[in-house]
Length: 185
Image (cartoon, rainbow, N blue to C red; front, side, top):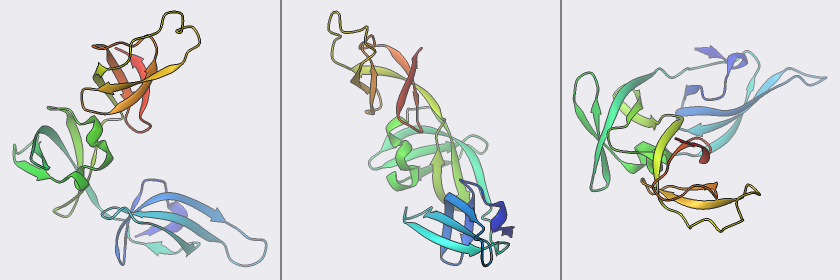
């Protein structure tokens, strides 16, 4: 159990109707009346977002999540095959279990798989990945000094805005949390 006064963004709670991740929280101390904590919670399995208010000092269940390091091997039909780095056991994950990180998933990439008991609830991919640009329009002569951007399709199918000097075949580093170009490798 954890006090709602100790909530942090990203913490996973075990409430009566499922596992919820804290998206936002705000401690409110009105001039009159008792303090409370206003939260925005996201259901880990369904993605549903709700707002919930707790009394200050109220206790809630903290979900015990296990992180297992796994390697992405290949895509088989609609499933993504991962291998546990310790036991070499192979698991098949659905698109929903992998989440938004699918567009950056590259063969042999090591990821963190989040598990609650024996149930897989999500996949954390590295915050930065290096990918090859496979398709981007050519730069226009004289149009590179202003620092504009153009779309580039990466080897995994993700589309990112990159500076004009990036061309096909370049390796770039991308922030997977914000879908932004960081630098050329």
